Image (tube, rainbow, N blue to C red; front, top):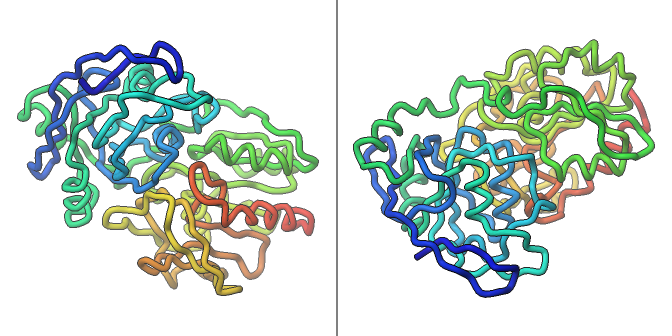
Length: 371
């Protein structure tokens, strides 16, 4: 009674019966609902996201590899999906949890419904869940492993308890590109490290430069051989300390080419400078986080998606430029002696507010000045 097939955007729908389904957390908490998306069992670290819109961009963000996404917004799927809003070729998340899957999609851009997108990608979903209770539990217990599907409770509990979470696991290796590729037609040349890069980031960079996207394991020497005007460090999933070779490569690039990092790229830049990272209790996942820009005192409303953060006071040779007003997390750094800076949040706004898009212009200005 909760999943439906479209007969055309804005038209009537033919309903498909959903099977009873469960979400079971490793600590024994159980949440009932009905299945949608792909059949089978999905297991991963359960997190919650507070965005009011942009569910497709969230689900297709590679930064969610290894995780099950809970949406706190009640109605999900009401404007359908379109390939234009995909942030990657396919979702990397392990599952999707919603309160109320929309009975009808209605939008002129819609090309299909959310359930079909998940089914094609092999991602299971559950609807009808008391997401308010689930979110409150995650705020108290932190992001915990879980499993969802139509299997029985003991089977799902066993799957949840086998799930290792994200600590110490190189999830970037599961989402990075296999070979380099080129996007954009801007006047400069940028090499972008793909730690799980989003299409919206590439659209912004592509207006500034011809962008060659390279795998996460690309050595610094190969990047410099391309003679770029700048290097971009992308977002990505999981524990920054587990990403093999990235910090060493960044360290060799610093001072030789301007560098700009976002999200995981921010954490990796900090690590290359000697900084420490740590895991947040339940992460920052949403589109309404207030961040203060220290140089002006201005407050930016930002889009965020990360479970790890940079420890304050551990990054030598760089100044903190932005701070989260909710909990004081370091949201940006700028190097003192080399042209490099980064932010923890998502200025590309896919989805989210546009307050911080000026950072792409700052990267362009940094490239104009050179190393």
